Image (cartoon, rainbow, N blue to C red; front, side, top):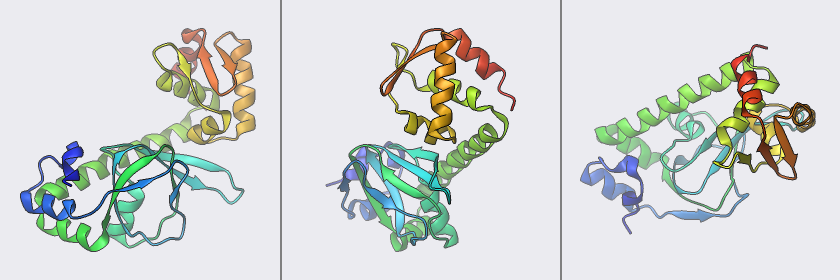
Length: 219
Protein backbone atom coordinates (compact mmCIF):
# COMPACT_ATOMS: atom_id res chain seq x y z
CA UNK A 1 0.00 0.00 0.00
CA UNK A 2 1.34 3.45 -0.91
CA UNK A 3 0.65 5.18 2.38
CA UNK A 4 2.76 8.21 1.43
CA UNK A 5 -0.22 9.38 -0.62
CA UNK A 6 -2.03 9.99 2.68
CA UNK A 7 0.60 12.46 3.92
CA UNK A 8 0.33 15.81 2.16
CA UNK A 9 3.74 16.94 3.41
CA UNK A 10 5.34 14.10 1.42
CA UNK A 11 3.68 14.99 -1.90
CA UNK A 12 6.85 16.52 -3.40
CA UNK A 13 9.15 13.59 -2.57
CA UNK A 14 11.25 12.08 -5.35
CA UNK A 15 10.09 8.70 -6.66
CA UNK A 16 12.94 6.81 -5.00
CA UNK A 17 12.38 8.42 -1.62
CA UNK A 18 8.66 7.74 -1.79
CA UNK A 19 9.30 4.10 -2.71
CA UNK A 20 11.69 3.68 0.24
CA UNK A 21 9.06 5.01 2.64
CA UNK A 22 6.22 2.99 1.11
CA UNK A 23 8.15 -0.19 1.94
CA UNK A 24 7.51 0.60 5.61
CA UNK A 25 4.25 -0.62 7.13
CA UNK A 26 1.95 1.76 9.02
CA UNK A 27 0.97 0.68 12.52
CA UNK A 28 -2.17 1.31 14.54
CA UNK A 29 -1.86 2.21 18.22
CA UNK A 30 -4.78 2.49 20.66
CA UNK A 31 -5.67 5.54 22.70
CA UNK A 32 -3.48 5.71 25.78
CA UNK A 33 -0.56 3.78 24.27
CA UNK A 34 2.86 5.09 25.36
CA UNK A 35 5.01 5.51 22.26
CA UNK A 36 8.21 6.42 24.07
CA UNK A 37 9.40 7.33 27.57
CA UNK A 38 12.31 9.30 29.09
CA UNK A 39 15.65 7.52 28.82
CA UNK A 40 14.70 5.33 25.86
CA UNK A 41 16.80 5.36 22.72
CA UNK A 42 15.25 7.11 19.73
CA UNK A 43 14.44 4.38 17.21
CA UNK A 44 13.07 6.40 14.29
CA UNK A 45 11.24 9.35 12.80
CA UNK A 46 7.51 9.43 13.52
CA UNK A 47 5.02 10.28 10.76
CA UNK A 48 1.43 10.52 12.03
CA UNK A 49 -1.15 9.62 9.37
CA UNK A 50 -4.26 9.93 11.52
CA UNK A 51 -5.00 10.48 15.17
CA UNK A 52 -3.17 12.53 17.75
CA UNK A 53 -0.11 12.20 20.02
CA UNK A 54 0.69 14.29 23.10
CA UNK A 55 4.31 14.74 24.22
CA UNK A 56 4.72 15.49 27.94
CA UNK A 57 7.63 16.46 30.16
CA UNK A 58 7.36 14.59 33.47
CA UNK A 59 8.63 16.40 36.58
CA UNK A 60 10.30 14.73 39.58
CA UNK A 61 7.09 15.24 41.57
CA UNK A 62 5.08 13.36 38.95
CA UNK A 63 3.43 16.46 37.50
CA UNK A 64 3.57 16.70 33.74
CA UNK A 65 3.60 19.54 31.24
CA UNK A 66 2.26 19.22 27.71
CA UNK A 67 5.21 20.24 25.51
CA UNK A 68 3.45 19.85 22.18
CA UNK A 69 1.00 17.76 20.24
CA UNK A 70 1.62 15.82 17.04
CA UNK A 71 -1.22 15.72 14.52
CA UNK A 72 -1.02 14.55 10.88
CA UNK A 73 1.49 16.73 9.04
CA UNK A 74 3.36 17.76 12.21
CA UNK A 75 6.70 16.53 13.51
CA UNK A 76 7.93 15.12 16.80
CA UNK A 77 10.89 17.28 17.80
CA UNK A 78 12.02 14.71 20.38
CA UNK A 79 12.48 12.12 17.64
CA UNK A 80 14.22 14.53 15.27
CA UNK A 81 16.63 15.76 17.96
CA UNK A 82 17.45 12.21 18.98
CA UNK A 83 18.10 11.07 15.42
CA UNK A 84 20.27 14.08 14.57
CA UNK A 85 22.09 14.43 17.88
CA UNK A 86 22.08 10.94 19.30
CA UNK A 87 20.31 11.86 22.55
CA UNK A 88 17.74 9.66 24.28
CA UNK A 89 14.14 10.73 24.78
CA UNK A 90 13.65 13.20 27.64
CA UNK A 91 9.84 13.27 27.45
CA UNK A 92 6.92 10.84 27.17
CA UNK A 93 4.63 10.48 24.15
CA UNK A 94 1.12 9.07 24.46
CA UNK A 95 -1.55 8.51 21.82
CA UNK A 96 -4.48 10.69 22.90
CA UNK A 97 -6.78 9.10 20.30
CA UNK A 98 -6.56 5.90 18.25
CA UNK A 99 -3.62 6.73 16.01
CA UNK A 100 -2.14 5.40 12.78
CA UNK A 101 1.52 6.18 12.23
CA UNK A 102 4.71 5.13 10.50
CA UNK A 103 8.06 4.82 12.26
CA UNK A 104 10.93 5.51 9.86
CA UNK A 105 13.93 3.57 11.27
CA UNK A 106 17.11 5.53 11.96
CA UNK A 107 19.10 4.01 9.02
CA UNK A 108 16.30 4.77 6.53
CA UNK A 109 15.84 8.28 7.97
CA UNK A 110 19.55 9.13 7.74
CA UNK A 111 19.84 7.70 4.22
CA UNK A 112 16.87 9.72 2.98
CA UNK A 113 18.16 12.81 4.72
CA UNK A 114 21.45 12.37 2.86
CA UNK A 115 20.16 11.65 -0.65
CA UNK A 116 16.71 13.24 -0.88
CA UNK A 117 16.57 17.07 -1.00
CA UNK A 118 12.77 16.95 -0.81
CA UNK A 119 12.83 14.78 2.33
CA UNK A 120 15.41 17.10 3.93
CA UNK A 121 13.14 20.05 3.20
CA UNK A 122 10.17 18.30 4.83
CA UNK A 123 12.15 17.36 7.94
CA UNK A 124 13.79 20.73 8.53
CA UNK A 125 10.69 22.78 7.71
CA UNK A 126 8.71 20.75 10.25
CA UNK A 127 11.59 21.01 12.74
CA UNK A 128 11.73 24.80 12.38
CA UNK A 129 7.97 25.13 12.82
CA UNK A 130 8.07 22.98 15.94
CA UNK A 131 11.02 24.92 17.40
CA UNK A 132 9.13 28.17 16.95
CA UNK A 133 6.14 26.68 18.75
CA UNK A 134 8.44 25.58 21.59
CA UNK A 135 9.83 29.11 21.89
CA UNK A 136 6.27 30.42 22.12
CA UNK A 137 5.56 27.89 24.87
CA UNK A 138 8.61 29.08 26.83
CA UNK A 139 7.48 32.69 26.41
CA UNK A 140 3.96 31.83 27.53
CA UNK A 141 5.13 29.91 30.60
CA UNK A 142 7.58 32.65 31.56
CA UNK A 143 5.57 35.81 31.02
CA UNK A 144 1.85 34.95 31.21
CA UNK A 145 -0.11 34.60 34.43
CA UNK A 146 -2.01 31.35 34.99
CA UNK A 147 -5.30 33.23 34.51
CA UNK A 148 -4.15 34.55 31.14
CA UNK A 149 -2.91 31.13 30.02
CA UNK A 150 -6.21 29.56 31.05
CA UNK A 151 -8.27 32.23 29.27
CA UNK A 152 -6.15 31.90 26.11
CA UNK A 153 -6.60 28.11 26.11
CA UNK A 154 -10.37 28.38 26.48
CA UNK A 155 -10.66 30.95 23.69
CA UNK A 156 -8.30 29.06 21.39
CA UNK A 157 -9.81 25.58 21.78
CA UNK A 158 -13.50 26.30 22.26
CA UNK A 159 -15.89 24.93 19.63
CA UNK A 160 -18.05 27.19 17.49
CA UNK A 161 -20.77 26.96 20.14
CA UNK A 162 -18.36 28.36 22.73
CA UNK A 163 -17.72 25.16 24.67
CA UNK A 164 -14.52 23.29 25.47
CA UNK A 165 -14.46 19.56 26.27
CA UNK A 166 -11.42 19.09 28.53
CA UNK A 167 -10.95 17.82 32.06
CA UNK A 168 -9.22 19.96 34.66
CA UNK A 169 -6.25 17.57 34.58
CA UNK A 170 -5.94 17.96 30.80
CA UNK A 171 -6.13 21.75 31.11
CA UNK A 172 -3.46 21.71 33.82
CA UNK A 173 -1.09 19.74 31.60
CA UNK A 174 -1.75 22.05 28.67
CA UNK A 175 -0.97 25.28 30.54
CA UNK A 176 1.74 23.94 32.85
CA UNK A 177 0.20 24.11 36.29
CA UNK A 178 -1.51 21.89 38.87
CA UNK A 179 -5.08 20.64 38.60
CA UNK A 180 -5.91 22.29 41.93
CA UNK A 181 -4.78 25.65 40.56
CA UNK A 182 -6.96 25.18 37.47
CA UNK A 183 -9.94 24.32 39.67
CA UNK A 184 -9.55 27.54 41.70
CA UNK A 185 -9.10 29.70 38.58
CA UNK A 186 -12.14 28.17 36.90
CA UNK A 187 -14.20 28.88 40.01
CA UNK A 188 -13.01 32.48 39.91
CA UNK A 189 -13.91 32.83 36.22
CA UNK A 190 -17.32 31.30 36.89
CA UNK A 191 -18.00 33.77 39.71
CA UNK A 192 -17.00 36.60 37.36
CA UNK A 193 -19.58 35.37 34.86
CA UNK A 194 -17.00 34.55 32.19
CA UNK A 195 -17.67 30.80 31.99
CA UNK A 196 -19.88 28.02 33.26
CA UNK A 197 -17.91 24.98 34.40
CA UNK A 198 -19.53 21.59 33.94
CA UNK A 199 -18.15 18.09 34.37
CA UNK A 200 -15.51 17.72 31.66
CA UNK A 201 -16.74 20.79 29.79
CA UNK A 202 -16.44 24.58 29.99
CA UNK A 203 -18.92 26.95 28.35
CA UNK A 204 -18.05 30.55 27.56
CA UNK A 205 -20.59 33.04 28.91
CA UNK A 206 -18.69 36.34 28.53
CA UNK A 207 -15.92 36.28 25.94
CA UNK A 208 -14.91 39.87 26.72
CA UNK A 209 -13.76 38.92 30.24
CA UNK A 210 -11.49 36.20 28.85
CA UNK A 211 -10.14 38.47 26.12
CA UNK A 212 -9.31 41.12 28.73
CA UNK A 213 -7.24 38.59 30.67
CA UNK A 214 -5.32 37.61 27.54
CA UNK A 215 -4.74 41.28 26.68
CA UNK A 216 -3.08 41.84 30.09
CA UNK A 217 -0.96 38.68 30.47
CA UNK A 218 1.97 39.96 32.53
CA UNK A 219 3.08 37.81 35.44
